[in-house]
Image 1 (cartoon, rainbow, N blue to C red):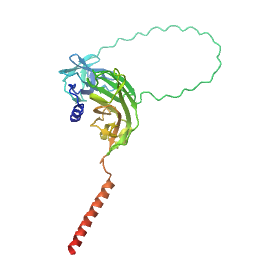
Image 2: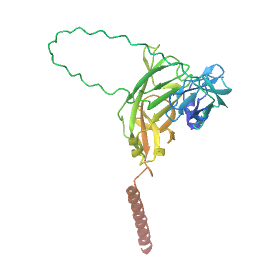
Image 3: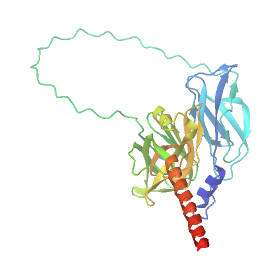
Image 4: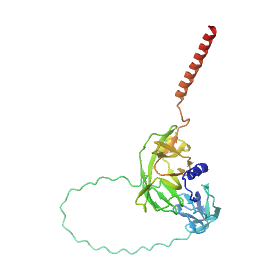
Amino acid sequence: MLAVVAALIGGTGTALAQPPIPADYAGYVYVGGSPGGAGLQVTAKIGTYTTDAATTDATGYYFVLVVGPPEGVTGTIEFFVNGVKAAETDTFEAAYSNWNFDLHVTALPTPTPTVTPTPTATPTPTVTPTPTVTPTVTPTPSPTPGALSGEGTVTAAGGTVSTDDGRVNLNFPAGAVTNDTDVSIAPSTAPGPAPGGFRLGSTMFSIEATCGPCGGTPVTELEAPIQVCVQYSSADIAAAGGDPQLLALAYYDATAGEWVALETDVNTVTGLACAWTSHVSVWSILAESEGGGLVWWIWVVIGVAGLGLIVAIIAIARRAGAE
């Protein structure tokens, strides 16, 4: 994967120094030796640099905490749970991943209880005449919000944009964009067939980015790779024959008219598929076909044709010798 990221960074063609590729962490939070539960905010610091927060789920598992300091900021990473320093530390290493990095704190501060105000007595309403009944106009139903859709703004310092349903997360390290950039995620349909050896999954969306200070100019190529993490669905697993390790993230190259499958980390515990890229376009989860390539009967036809050609050559050679 590091080779892929290095190739992407090298392909930008810029002489400017690039920020280090972020490290990412995930694991369980324990408070006083017991699982932390849901809603805890996990952050990390290197000097004056502080990450965006990752939130724990009902089991106390946090994912994913992206540590992407600016160029030149290195050293010891300190981890915090709701502002309380954890016992664990680590040394920053670019492109490092550890999804079993558990954190331990002795205790968390008890939140101050909210005082419920005494309700004001409701006065007896005045009887009003019954209004004339008018027909009710049924509004046109709107699409369910949050299904693979979301938007946000990232700066040169980095940031995260997620869909409302939490299934897609885009993690921008520092330097991925040079100006304030508006990023939107929306459901999409397939612009082209799946590449050889793959099937299209059911999860498909588009990523669009525009430069705010540049008058809304579209951004199609980023200055540094970002991390794209997608929660795959049961339909995606079914397309892979039940094996999630056969899933891969891909973006559609409109110029070449084809899908480009990326090296993908699949975590079957969290149900996430993650990859690094500098492209924003239409994205999909692909399912690799086991034994992908030509189907078996095509190989049989090729074998029979080859055997027939060999027999014909031998027969012609014998006939020429007899004459």
